Amino acid sequence: MSERAQYYLSTKLPPSLEWVDNSCSLNSAKIDQNSTLWLTLIRGETDMPTQKIFYPDQALIFRSLPEEFQLIHAMGLSFNDFCSRGYPERESLYFAYVETHRNPHGIATASGAHEFYRRMTEYLRTAMDMVEHVIATYFRTFAERLPAHNSVANCLDTIQMLKLATSDPGHNPSSLERRRNFEAKRQLGIALQLFAIETADEESAVADDLSSIDQLTWERLFVPDESVDLWLIAGLNSARANRSENLELFRTHRQAKRRARERRHLETNIKEELLPSRVTNLGEKNYIVYVGNRRKRLLSTLLKLERGRPTGDRRGWKYVVVAVHQTGNELRLATRDDARVFHDHTHKTLWQSPLVVSPDPPNPNPHRHETYWDLKTLGRYHRADNGRMIAGSAEQLVTTIQDHLDTYVATDGLNHDLYRARQAMEFLGPLWFPHHRGPYDEVASMRLPGFGVDWDSPRLKEQLEHWWKNQL
Image (cartoon, rainbow, N blue to C red):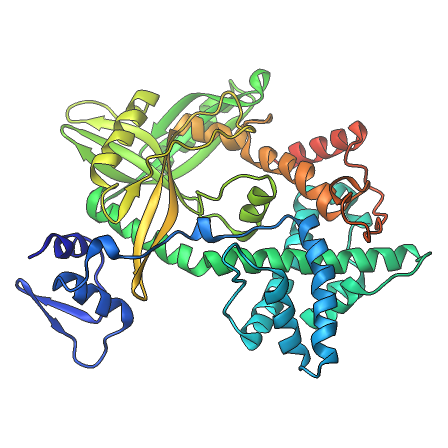
């Protein structure tokens, strides 16, 4: 059998191929494009060096919201021009998008007018959900000032939204007219951003890839069908921004409850957690690992792109090394050295084709907290698709249970919820609810909507910080 065949046999086979002994037979009638690709590779009919590889993150052309505002204005002019020539409105909308949102190769989308309109309807709904979620989760202190204008909140028609966004509010518009015009641009702009993200790397494909990667972990990394439930008890040191300390592990809930009652008499704050974990065997040691799903949702991806950061972690997962057990010894809490050993082991076992480690080091995150610790692996997951190979970006994190715990119990910038809230205030606040022109200086037609929330005010930041911490 050829090396190409061995490579593909090591990955998940399409359901339309059956394998008998060392040969393959077609499962009669159903042969999809993926299966055809597999067969030609196995038979040696396709030369691997000529295999076309598609990199979703490199194909993404993301435009910040101020850029989209300018393109929306151009879209409106183009839309009106096509309509004046007798084209139907939905086709005019599609042609206007294609004309104004080209990538370096001159391509915008090949979805067609009907599919473009259908998808944009969904993205307008998602955009409204995102805005409402951000208000409720991060800006609730000022929620009464930020709700959307009814004309915008109830509009899922992309054509109508484009008309609202490009209508001239006049020389002396009322505050509600300014808000309606701005919010229509905002909602349409966010929907167009989501369309760009999904066109390059659809969320359903990301989820499918992560499911396949998780299946690989059971085959290559963890003991199949074996799990361990551990209970964790930790004290929270209020003098150190609630950092965890004196962590203890228990195999039963009864033991954990008894110990928690004892510790509450001595300590003010106690944290209890159940950790359903998997097991990796390394010689005489068993590493007990809690696995977290870090698939980037659309809002997180959007925020990251608005920050100017790459989206290499859309297919993300996290290994929290909880404990180590050696034959004849007691279960002990895992250290950072244990996490390093486990991290190295994943490179030897899990990170093999179709998972490929990226040769380039990750770009440092300027917002990373100085005490945060993990080990990161960036790479790609290769999946056959319609005669090509899709190399989706993937990211693996390895850390310890104490480092993991601190990211959601700490009350300073190490806390991941606070970290995300501060990013929302810094980037989404001025873009979605602007108080000054700021990022919109280049958009001459933009009228300030008058939300009345000054994102540069120290008093405002203090109020939000206080509210965020009360939610922890």
